[in-house]
Length: 261
Image (cartoon, rainbow, N blue to C red; front, side, top):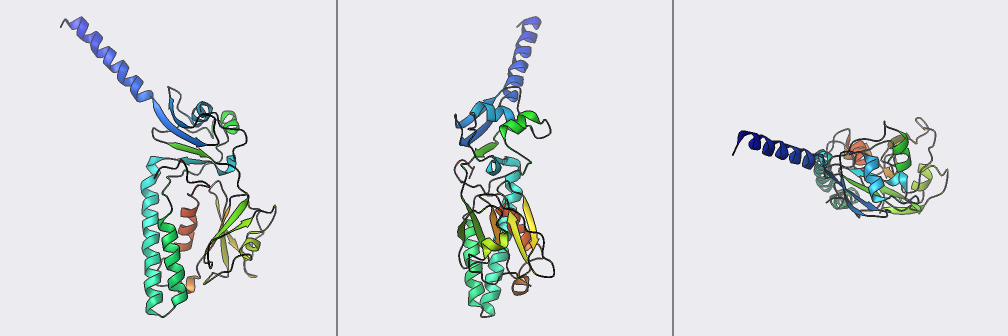
């Protein structure tokens, strides 16, 4: 092959590789006009994926979820650590004859094990209109990312140190502790609650007379995590256990559809 022709072939190959590397595939599901994998060209940002999928204006933007492969492993490790600690709580409770705590921790462990590892990245907004207006919020996306835009829910979930997880109708301006009052608790911390908004933001709230915080308003689809009483789980878990549980719950979608396994 002549040197000039060889150079042209190499230039063509390099150009082809550059095009291939520039293409980014992002899966967008839920309340969108064109669900599925969106192949993006040279522009590879959140708004490009939402524009290609045509997110419905009626989608529940506050509950939208951005999943990234790079976050899967640390979240899987967090889940594994929590599963181990709940197993230790159960074993300790059985040795001490506390069957109520043993059953509760076993049920929490089963529920946690069934939750997907989503790779959720918590951001300020995933509203396409806001992304288009703000470069600071319009992050670059990576190949293999996923976006989920759910429908608006009508309830708030109460989980954790409760007889069983329950869903309570959402009421505007209702305080988190008032949602908990509708669900019988077991072995619950009397001082704290964790409020998890549908965008993944986590708030630790004091609820006792000595540490009571001002109530916050929960959005539809929020989760209230009732922490286990640190006194009854002491020795089986570390001091961050309840906060870690709340942080993992914050990665969960409103709707599992479309979230990578």
